[in-house]
Image 1 (tube, rainbow, N blue to C red):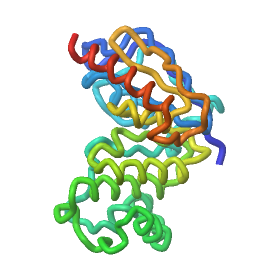
Image 2: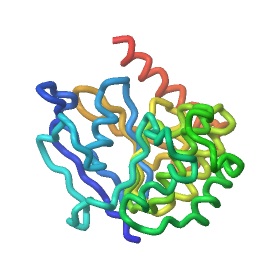
Image 3: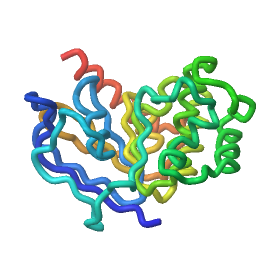
Image 4: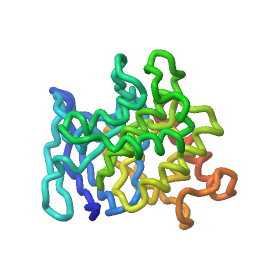
Length: 242
């Protein structure tokens, strides 16, 4: 699998509203990139744009992959709300992509993924009987099983408790190695732990962030990680208070 680099530049609009002006984003091939910023700035909208989803949003500018090939069928997205089918079991939710394409689901791989995510005993349960964190892990399994070269993760760990969040971050980093991953998050620690490139978004554009030189996933209690997390929290607090 060859994961392409992605380039986005221009102005992001939603209906008649300009969300972000003067964007210039280069997502390196096979690496994790992170989008941070206050609520409503357009992070999820950018994710939907990359995933090719329909909506009232538009980019007035350029969006291209480094191999010049269309991204149709090459992007898997984990949406913020998980979007699980309420009438389907955990196993059927994870394998829905294959069945919608008329393919035979890889049930063995789905079961192995669910086991690794701590959901092995819940495969026949329905979403309404799961906790918020369990539903989020089902959505993560459904994204991972697609095995796409480009992956968009929109707040993928937000409903998890702190210890589980760290474990799932490490698991996702391992399982998505070599993919071009765009992580959308409000959590500075998550960005610092997982990203090789990151930007802080505002209506005026995207500000590139300096990240530690160490390879991700970085230790949550490393001095450099903690110091950068504190600086990013201060910047986000200032943006939200404005």
